[in-house]
Length: 392
Ligand code: SAH
Picture 1 (cartoon, helix red, strand yellow):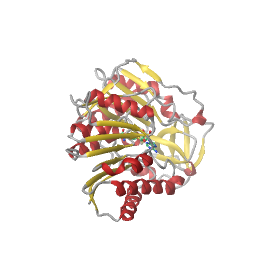
Picture 2 (spheres, rainbow, N blue to C red; picture 1 turned 180 degrees about the vertical axis):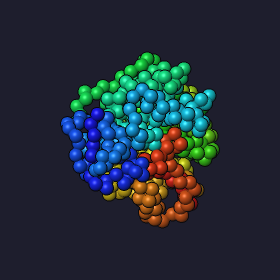
Picture 3 (cartoon, rainbow, N blue to C red; picture 1 turned 30 degrees about the vertical axis):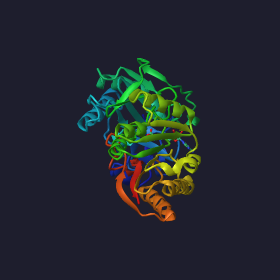
Picture 4 (cartoon, rainbow, N blue to C red; picture 1 turned 90 degrees about the vertical axis):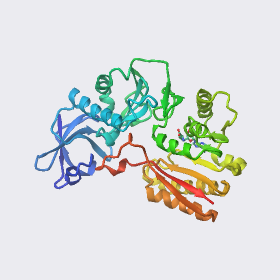
């Protein structure tokens, strides 16, 4: 195993358990290290600090452990057991009404670069680092052991999440099992998951609690679910007693999925209509008939340099919703861009509200659910932000 020597004094953040080593903090490495290898990190004086995956880029090592231990079978079993115990403790696993949850949330579960979502009997494993890609079979073995009797299929889906320069020739596919059954359940509602081609791991698991909150506000309302993807918010609104629900997404495939999912839960229910259309165009055309609007757009900024444009995007989108929503309406508005802070987002929405001149109150400030935990030593892990607003 290669050793990474830090520059003098560069161990401070690691001593506070921050799980990244930046390339600028490295003095030298004892030999030729390959991307994805497990390395030991030591101070300039040679004192042990951490073990982690080496990668090429500004984050050079992602820490797996601050103990001087082997990253082998026992390590994976232990980490996954802790993760699973936590999901049972918070009630998302082992729950007859819910079999959809995030089992591993990267740094939040002390496994940087790894995401695992569970959909009933199938777990979808996603690597965001070459290191985790290299460990995928060990992870899968430990996962099937820890979740024996629960998870029977493991689908590996990292085609779009790995650095393309690493040229791993990565393909998506089952590592274990391979069931065609793809219906999962969230809070008693069913939906199809498209592991093969769907976005992320197939479903946006992170909106579960925010959808449940929406259900409470849906009774008798006309709901617009903008950027609906698989229609998650729509079926909660229907169960909550909405008068009508319109789901909009620019992707025809997303609209197909939404229609299928609505049919699965509310067959033949005429309250729902789905539109494959651009959000802005739709708001201009149809926007003024709703008193409950959800705006859950894709990440407008994936990198820091796109921040300005992203904030402008949030401003424009929210301004349009404020302009259109009926008096007494409720707006659920979100940002899932990691680089957009809570304050950035709030300022963008505040500016949009001011542009409309309407009286707006904040009812709730939302974030990601408990199965997407934030490691307290890694505040960067907080990414989902939402506001629920009452618009007079
Ligand atoms: N709210 C969803 C997740 C939204 S993901 C859920 O709860 O699961 C973002 C979605 O926005 C994607 O499905 C994407 O197809 C859609 N999208 C991107 N740009 C769009 C645009 N200009 N107009 C409408 N939809 C758009």
